[in-house]
Structures are given as structure tokens and as C-alpha cells.
Amino acid sequence: MKKLISLCLFAMVSFAASAEKMPFTEALYQQYQQNDEVYLVDVFATWCPTCKKQQHILNEYFKAHPDSHIKTLVVDFDTQKSWVSHFRAPRQSTLLLYKGSEQLWFSVAETSKQKIFDALMSADNMMPAKGMMDSGHMMEKGQMMEKGKMMEKGKMMPADTMADKKMMSEHNTMTMEKR
Image 1 (cartoon, rainbow, N blue to C red):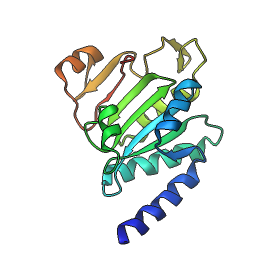
Image 2: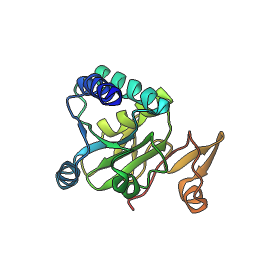
Image 3: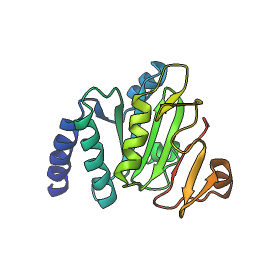
């Protein structure tokens, strides 16, 4: 009962920051894909301190950007295991950003306000069918942030090299091509 009350209070606070934040359903997911919407999939657990940090950052972003067109689908890590697997989320606190069915960004346990804000801002500035804007530079579809590269302990590596090695640490942020 205590967990349920905690979850309800958390949901009310979180959903208040973004009118477009919804619990994950297959129907909404398919609708966002079909309508070529920009949306964030947030793999969340109520007991996860990293998830709570991410929620604070996400709420800050949506409060600072009330005109954001990004919608958020919250996948419950504990009760929606098939969807956790579908999104290849190695753990709770995984964030995935999509436009339609194209995955634009993937992160695990990212709590850098700047990195999360940058990813969301890039998606908010997305130009339909032309790519993405990043500090005034056009980027190709399927690329985001470090232009096809990701950070591993302070050094840049091509995203495909990292994916081939299946290396994901808690603070890696990576760009993924459409799977």
C-alpha cells in the first residue's frame, strides 16, 4: 500500500511537469510511430535513485520548454518486462528518444543535465524529413549529439565500434542507427 501511494504521488508530480507524459501502452507507442511523433521512452522504476534524478532533470526541461513537442512514454521496469526487453534496456534508468520508428538517442543511467537537455533540445528542433539541428549545424537523420560517436571514459569512439563490443556503462550516451 505504501508503495502504491508513493507511486501515485510521484506520478502526479511527474505528469504535472509535462502534459504529454503517459504510462507506456502498446497503442500509444504504435500511434506515435505511425504519426511520426517525437517521443521519449523512459524505462523507470520507483525504487531507482538514478531514475528519480532523471525525472527531476526531465521535469526541469519540460518546465523550461513548455512548447516542447516531445511526448514521453514511461515503461515500468518492474511490471512491463516484455517492453523492457523490446527496447533492449539493460536496466532501469534507460532513456530512448525516437521520431516515429527511428531511434535517435539511447542512454543508460545518464544524469548529466546538459547531456539530457542537449538530446531533448536537438529533438525539439528537429526539422521534418531534413535531419536535425545542433548548434546551427545540420546533422543527418539517425545521428545525434556527437555526430555518430559516443563517450567512453572521456574518449570518443565510433558508435558502431561500441555496439559491436556491446559495451554500455552507466554514463554512456550513444547514438543508435535505426535497428
